[in-house]
Length: 362
Image 1: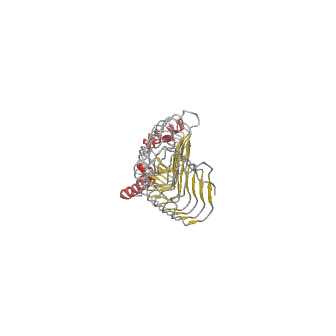
Image 2: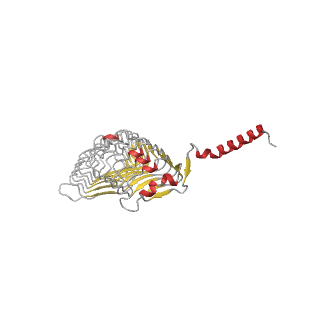
Image 3: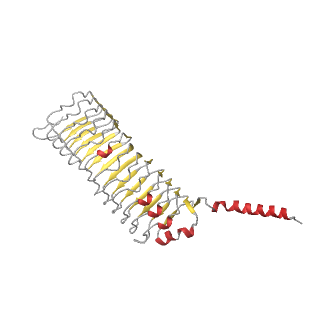
């Protein structure tokens, strides 16, 4: 017969064992859905807490992508989530106006994609997100006016695309972003008049600014390093001032800048470009002043279709062009003054223009 004290010990042992077995269910983050999950209806979102009670971490991608137009209106029932071991993808939802139900997510190990949500007004629901392991894509959200909600993010190791958001007025919300590892692209945002919000941006892997009504580059004054190509095209800027902290570029394309009259001071610090320099289709640009420190171009130099370019003044320090040098369709150019220091062209020299009073082909 078991004596009473022994009985007590056995009961305590059983209770302790039960408590230990239940620990994963009590106050400890639980991972679920190792293959991720795609939610295609409001009903699936609303049922998430019942279907996955206690689940705070998803082991793969979380995708919210409605099957029927206008079905998904909110993601409020996903508030229990705080970590995504994969990508967070919110796309093709026509009725959703906010993503506030994601406000407890602090980190994702994949990419953030917010794409083609035609009624989405803001990103406030991402205000706790401080870590993105790969890329960020904010594309085709017609009603989105700013990026407030991304202020906890200070680096994006991969690509960062902000494209085709017709209602976007500024980049406010990126105030703490200092690093983008791959290309940073701002393209076809038809209402974006300012780069305000990028004042802390220090390093990018490449920079594409294309077809936005951005009036100046002054918010980029902290940008010191661009490790890839720079393409600036179809912007109504009048000068390049704002890139003053740069000293080296991998490549540079300035094209179809219809209001550009001067390169200003923004490129004065550039002493070398590893690859190509293309300055083309800028109908009001009068000279090359602003490239006064440039000594070496590792690729081709193309100066083409700048209708009122009168001189090459500004290139007085240029000594070495490793590739081709092409001067085409410069109707007002009458001399090569400004190239006095040029000693070496590694490729072909091509001068083609046939305008009265201008240079002739060689």
